[in-house]
Length: 238
Image (tube, rainbow, N blue to C red; front, side, top):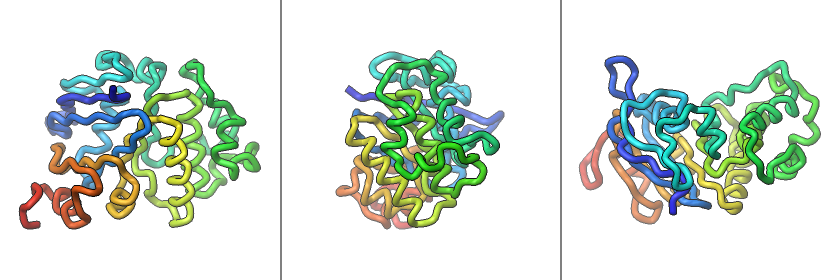
């Protein structure tokens, strides 16, 4: 059974239809990459799944339970976490204080401050540091750790590598691979197509709010992913 099942999700910004009937599913221990150019609707899709943006229609099922009508807070309590683009930490709060905010869902599970520091060893020495003083990679680690403190079953991450150095990106993905091994369902928005091809279990490409390609890395290529990002179906010339 899929941990996260999204069916025919539709969302808009005023008169602009941003997401047109998107469906996807992520199983336990699976990493699905959501690709597409800027404005494709990826962020709106994630926010609609999380309940931060009101969907116009469709269903979101988490661990077999329909949460489509639940608020964002109730979806988080059910085990759905979102790491937003830009991390959105509280810069004048310490690393520990930012992490503790993730416990607001009151879910029980294995994630504690010590567990986060074991998963992200570099953060342990930054425990009392202000989040605003950290590097981009360290901030991303805190944002992921904050999401884990809610003991989720599914984690969505928006633009994991945006603005990070190559070393920081490697650090972030090493942690995400460990989370996949632990059985979490991961839905990741990423602009790096090469990273997607070498890391993903599933690939979904969007253009103008619609899915233009679904594939596994073995079934597609860099050229096909790029073409689908501009709306071309498989086999069409870019």
